Length: 498
Ligand code: NAP
Image (cartoon, rainbow, N blue to C red; front, side, top):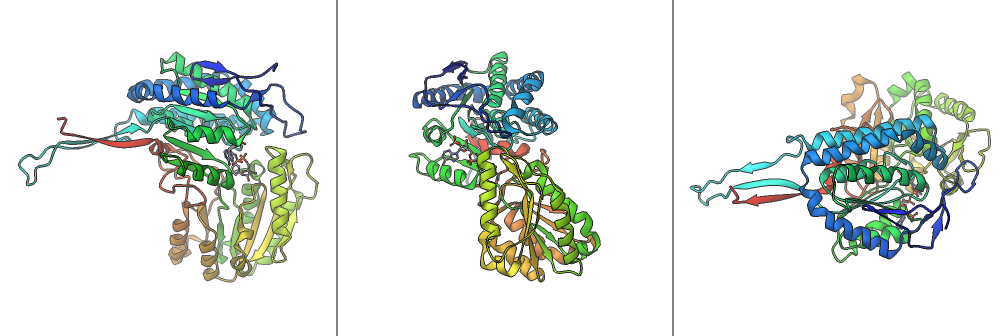
C-alpha cells in the first residue's frame, strides 16, 4: 500500500502484513495521511528474538553508555520537536501548548534517568564482607541490580509523548538496561513513528546493540497479546483502561512462565472537603475542582472524579456555584470518537440512576468527538448501596457526594477501591483531628494530597504514581518518577567472589 509506514525492528524496517489502518482526526473524523499495518506474528517473533539477543550486551553496557544513549534520544527529540508536535496535534487534537509541555516532560524524564543510573547511591549495592571466624561463618556477599530482560511497553492514548514511545515506561526500562519493544497506540501512529525513529537513530549513534529498541504498530488486541506471550519477554508496562489492563494481566498469568506486568489503569481520585474548608473557601473550591476535572478535557488518570463534601451551611451555595460555572464551560475535543462515545455512554448510564442528580452541564452541545463538562451529585448513603455509580468516567465530569459526617466519608472511602490519589481539604488547625481520614486515604491510594488538586504529577525522586488494585496491578511500584526504574531491575547477590 502507498504511504505505508514500516515497523522498526532494531535497525531494520519491515512491512509484511496486509491489515492496514490509519489515524483518524479527532476533530472531524477524517482519515489522516499515511497508513500503518498490524504487525504479523513473524514480525513480532523477530522483534522479540532481536531483543533477546541484544539483552546481554545491553545489560552489560556501562551506566555511562546507557546514559549517553538516553541523552542522544533527548537531543534528537528536541531537534525534531516541531514536526513531532505538528503531527501529534493532528492525531490527538491536544493543543500545541500542552504538547510542548509534554515534550518537555518526556525529555526531562529521559535526562533524569540518565543522571540517576550514574549515581551509585541511587542504585545502591550492598556489600557484606566475609566473616570466616563467625559461627557459622559468613561468606562475602555483594548484592547488585541487573536489568530484568526485554520489556513490552504499551503506548498510552492520553499521553502521546510522555507515556508513549519514548515515555516514562520506555525511559525507565532502557535506563535499567532492558531492551524495549513498544506496541504503539493506534490513535497516534505517525507520532509514534517519528519518536521511534529518534530512539532507533540514537541507538545507532551511540553504538547500542541491534534490537535494543523496536516499535510495532497495531490496531488489534492480537499484536499486544502475541508480544506479551512471547517467551523472550520478561516484563510488560501498560497505561490505559481497566478492561485492557485486566485482560492483559490475565493473559500474562497464563503464560508458561508468568512475568511481572505493571498496568496503570486510573481511578476516581477522591477529594474530601471538610466542613471548615468548604465554609471558608467554597468559591475557590468550586472553580479549582472544575479546573482540575476539565483539564485536558478530563483525560488524565488523576482527574478528580469524586468529590466528597461534609455537610455544611454552604452546601447549597457550593452546588449552585458549581452549576453556574459548569454551564459556562465549553466542550472540548476528546482523543477519539470512541473515547468520546464511551464518555457519553458512561455518563448517561450513571445519570439515569434515580439516586443521581445532574447539578449542571455545559450549555453548548459538543461537536464531533467533543466531551461536554458535567457535574453530578448523589448522597453518600445512596452511593454506599450502589458503589458502581462511583466508577471512573474518563472525561470532563465529576460526582459530588453529599456526606452527613466524617463517618460516612470513611465508609465511602472504604467501598471505592484502590486509587492513584486521595485529597483532603481542611483548615490547618483542624488537620490533627483527621488522622483517621489520612490513615484511610493512605490505605487506598499511592499519593495523598493536602489542600491541592491531583492533576499534574511531578516527575521526581519522591513521586509515587500507582495505588492498590484497580488503580494499578502492583502498588509497590510507581510508573512516574525515578523509582519507576525498579520495575525493571532484579537483584542478584554475588557470593564469595572477593
Ligand atoms: P485501552 O483500550 O486500554 O488500550 C490501551 C492499549 O492496550 C492499546 O494499545 C490497545 O491496543 C491495548 N489493549 C487494550 N485491550 C487489550 C486487550 N484485551 N488485549 C490486548 N491489547 C489490548 O485504552 P485506550 O485505547 O487508551 O482508551 C480506551 C478507554 O480506556 C478510554 O475510553 C478510557 O475509559 C480508558 N483510559 C483510561 C486511562 C486512565 O489513565 N485512566 C487512560 C487511557 C484510557 P489495541 O487497540 O491495538 O488492541
